[in-house]
Image 1 (spheres, rainbow, N blue to C red):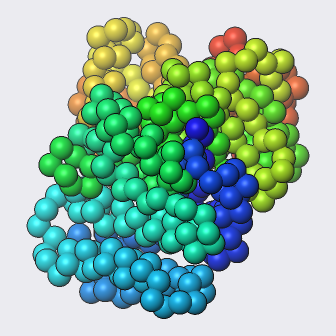
Image 2 (cartoon, rainbow, N blue to C red):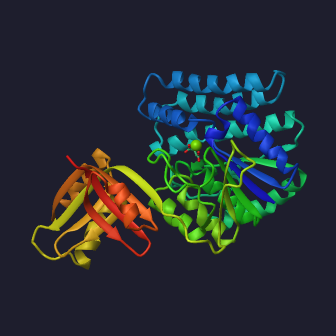
Image 3 (tube, protein in one colour):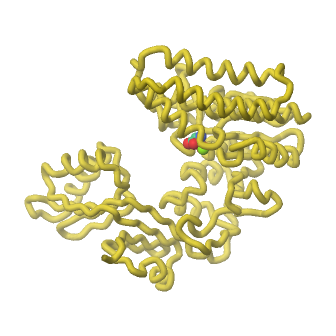
Length: 421
Ligand code: ASP
Ligand code: MG
């Protein structure tokens, strides 16, 4: 059996849904598990709704109406027969949010967020399953919350692997024998049966969890790009597709910030040696990128850009050296403030880190650090990571830039830089 994952961009309108249906149908009529995200930017819109509810804003009902209208417009175009059960099914799903909005937001914000934001995937998967059935392909809709079991760390829930694997192995092979199984990415359930989510862009990870538990023959992520590229087309005019990539390189690239796949996706499939394909839903006839343990030819250099970086330089107030004790103190403060370090370097008397610019977080961080350290910072920095670098690639990205910090390992070079004035 195989697992396909379709993201929001592939199902953003009726043409998209029809295209995805064709890709599924050309696979066959059974032994395929399809994981879908919410349609288009629905999760962003639901997030806005969740925050409006949490803050008690007036516009929450209007925001929900807009989300409903977007989905019912698509349903109206796909299902001419208004008696199709999808109409009721989707309405009932939205009713759950309506009930929630009627109450004051007394529960924890993260809990409320997950109850609201998870609706996007429930609705998109219902629409696609219904459309496949209307087109004569037997599709079985399954609620991912019956399978993906998590702790209650809402918005970034951790998967409980044993329970999850057992639930998947017990139920799904049966359904897969009968037809195409359609389920949701991104969402799971806690042991008390509340909905949880796995973190933004987490549908890839869901697909990997299902693939690993089912020992899938392959997993394919269908994207709007031809595969894994050596740079984000947002930054480079000339990008190249990487035809083959090792799991190790894929983990490194996503860890440093390549957004093509969610970073948590690789490990579960690597553990089971399941090859992972990244392919274009626009050109499904093309091969895309294969990520596997196969020995690869020397990989081409890849570039990962992160803008809006703050470079912090931290030195002990008592002029002591940066030693283990200071470092562990600094890391404890970073961890407490949930600040993720994108790159770091230490010298005898100072420790430098590049972190994402998030004003309120950074202010709190600097406050906490200031008790024992002198902190200097520089905003508006760029961080570029080059995997398989050489001098030529370094020159290419540093033209007109001043490099403030450079960290090199055998295969990876990271530079924190700023435009020259
Ligand atoms: N719909 C969720 C999001 O946009 C999950 C995903 O797309 O992977 O974050
Ligand atoms: Mg999405």
